[in-house]
Amino acid sequence: MRAADQPDVANAETDLQQRIRLALGLRPDLRLFRNNTGTLPDPRTGRPVQFGLARGSADLIGWRTVVVTPEMVGQRIAVFTSIEVKTATGRLAPTQQQWLHAVRAGGGVAGVARSVGDALRMVEMPLEFPQRSPSDPHAA
Image (cartoon, rainbow, N blue to C red; front, side, top):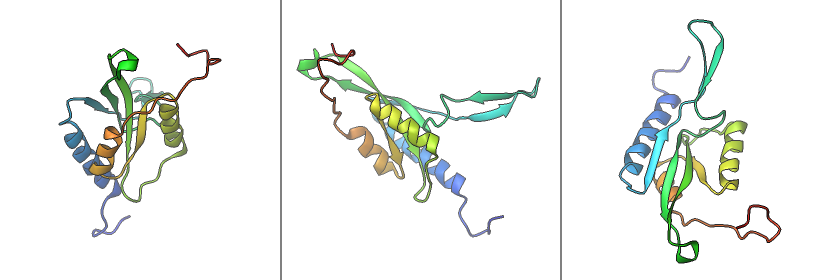
Protein backbone atom coordinates (compact mmCIF):
# COMPACT_ATOMS: atom_id res chain seq x y z
CA MET A 1 0.00 0.00 0.00
CA ARG A 2 1.38 3.41 -0.89
CA ALA A 3 1.53 6.37 1.43
CA ALA A 4 -0.94 9.17 0.72
CA ASP A 5 1.85 11.62 -0.10
CA GLN A 6 3.51 9.37 -2.73
CA PRO A 7 2.49 10.04 -6.33
CA ASP A 8 0.62 7.28 -8.12
CA VAL A 9 2.99 6.15 -10.91
CA ALA A 10 0.15 4.89 -13.14
CA ASN A 11 -1.67 8.22 -12.88
CA ALA A 12 1.57 10.13 -13.53
CA GLU A 13 2.14 8.09 -16.70
CA THR A 14 -1.48 8.60 -17.80
CA ASP A 15 -1.14 12.35 -17.25
CA LEU A 16 2.14 12.45 -19.19
CA GLN A 17 0.62 10.42 -22.01
CA GLN A 18 -2.33 12.80 -22.27
CA ARG A 19 -0.02 15.84 -22.38
CA ILE A 20 2.03 14.16 -25.14
CA ARG A 21 -1.13 13.32 -27.11
CA LEU A 22 -2.35 16.92 -26.86
CA ALA A 23 1.02 18.38 -27.91
CA LEU A 24 1.57 15.99 -30.81
CA GLY A 25 -2.07 16.25 -31.86
CA LEU A 26 -1.33 19.80 -33.03
CA ARG A 27 0.97 18.49 -35.77
CA PRO A 28 -0.78 18.02 -39.13
CA ASP A 29 1.90 15.52 -40.25
CA LEU A 30 1.33 13.13 -37.33
CA ARG A 31 -1.52 10.77 -36.49
CA LEU A 32 -1.21 8.75 -33.28
CA PHE A 33 -3.65 6.46 -31.51
CA ARG A 34 -3.80 5.16 -27.95
CA ASN A 35 -2.93 1.47 -27.89
CA ASN A 36 -4.16 -0.35 -24.80
CA THR A 37 -2.88 -3.91 -24.54
CA GLY A 38 -3.59 -6.71 -22.13
CA THR A 39 -5.74 -9.72 -21.41
CA LEU A 40 -9.23 -9.91 -19.90
CA PRO A 41 -11.60 -12.82 -19.42
CA ASP A 42 -14.42 -13.16 -21.94
CA PRO A 43 -17.56 -12.46 -19.85
CA ARG A 44 -19.45 -15.30 -21.54
CA THR A 45 -16.84 -18.06 -21.52
CA GLY A 46 -14.24 -16.92 -18.98
CA ARG A 47 -11.49 -17.58 -21.52
CA PRO A 48 -8.70 -15.00 -21.72
CA VAL A 49 -8.96 -12.57 -24.64
CA GLN A 50 -5.95 -10.50 -25.68
CA PHE A 51 -6.48 -6.96 -26.89
CA GLY A 52 -4.28 -4.27 -28.39
CA LEU A 53 -1.91 -4.34 -31.34
CA ALA A 54 0.62 -6.85 -30.01
CA ARG A 55 2.27 -7.85 -26.77
CA GLY A 56 4.87 -5.22 -25.91
CA SER A 57 3.56 -2.71 -28.47
CA ALA A 58 3.87 0.94 -27.51
CA ASP A 59 1.32 3.22 -25.87
CA LEU A 60 0.97 5.50 -28.88
CA ILE A 61 1.10 4.16 -32.42
CA GLY A 62 0.38 5.66 -35.81
CA TRP A 63 2.29 7.38 -38.56
CA ARG A 64 4.17 10.50 -39.52
CA THR A 65 3.57 11.76 -43.06
CA VAL A 66 6.81 12.56 -44.83
CA VAL A 67 7.40 14.21 -48.18
CA VAL A 68 10.12 12.12 -49.75
CA THR A 69 13.07 13.68 -51.46
CA PRO A 70 13.35 14.06 -55.25
CA GLU A 71 15.49 10.94 -55.45
CA MET A 72 12.49 9.10 -53.97
CA VAL A 73 10.12 10.38 -56.67
CA GLY A 74 8.70 13.21 -54.50
CA GLN A 75 5.79 11.16 -53.15
CA ARG A 76 4.38 11.38 -49.62
CA ILE A 77 4.69 8.34 -47.41
CA ALA A 78 3.45 7.40 -43.95
CA VAL A 79 6.22 6.30 -41.59
CA PHE A 80 5.04 3.98 -38.82
CA THR A 81 5.53 5.68 -35.45
CA SER A 82 5.49 3.99 -32.05
CA ILE A 83 5.96 5.93 -28.79
CA GLU A 84 6.20 4.19 -25.42
CA VAL A 85 5.32 6.60 -22.61
CA LYS A 86 7.18 6.18 -19.32
CA THR A 87 7.66 8.32 -16.25
CA ALA A 88 11.18 9.35 -15.26
CA THR A 89 11.55 6.11 -13.28
CA GLY A 90 9.46 3.81 -15.50
CA ARG A 91 11.19 0.77 -16.99
CA LEU A 92 10.63 -1.01 -20.26
CA ALA A 93 9.56 -4.63 -20.16
CA PRO A 94 11.60 -6.96 -22.40
CA THR A 95 8.64 -7.29 -24.80
CA GLN A 96 8.47 -3.48 -25.07
CA GLN A 97 12.20 -3.30 -25.85
CA GLN A 98 11.75 -5.97 -28.53
CA TRP A 99 8.81 -4.08 -30.04
CA LEU A 100 10.72 -0.79 -30.28
CA HIS A 101 13.71 -2.58 -31.81
CA ALA A 102 11.48 -4.31 -34.39
CA VAL A 103 9.83 -1.02 -35.41
CA ARG A 104 13.21 0.72 -35.82
CA ALA A 105 14.63 -2.26 -37.71
CA GLY A 106 11.65 -2.08 -40.07
CA GLY A 107 12.29 1.59 -40.84
CA GLY A 108 9.78 3.11 -38.43
CA VAL A 109 10.19 5.74 -35.74
CA ALA A 110 10.15 4.28 -32.23
CA GLY A 111 11.29 5.29 -28.79
CA VAL A 112 10.52 6.08 -25.18
CA ALA A 113 9.07 9.45 -24.21
CA ARG A 114 9.51 10.57 -20.61
CA SER A 115 8.28 14.08 -21.41
CA VAL A 116 6.40 16.01 -24.07
CA GLY A 117 9.80 17.30 -25.24
CA ASP A 118 11.08 13.74 -25.74
CA ALA A 119 8.05 12.91 -27.89
CA LEU A 120 8.41 16.08 -29.97
CA ARG A 121 12.12 15.43 -30.57
CA MET A 122 11.34 11.86 -31.61
CA VAL A 123 8.90 12.88 -34.34
CA GLU A 124 10.96 15.87 -35.53
CA MET A 125 14.15 13.89 -36.15
CA PRO A 126 15.10 13.56 -39.81
CA LEU A 127 14.51 10.09 -41.15
CA GLU A 128 17.47 8.00 -42.18
CA PHE A 129 17.10 5.32 -44.80
CA PRO A 130 19.91 2.77 -44.78
CA GLN A 131 21.58 1.98 -48.07
CA ARG A 132 20.67 -1.49 -49.29
CA SER A 133 23.18 -3.82 -50.81
CA PRO A 134 22.57 -5.13 -54.35
CA SER A 135 22.17 -8.64 -52.91
CA ASP A 136 19.29 -7.51 -50.65
CA PRO A 137 16.11 -9.26 -51.88
CA HIS A 138 14.07 -6.19 -50.85
CA ALA A 139 16.14 -3.74 -52.89
CA ALA A 140 14.27 -2.03 -55.68
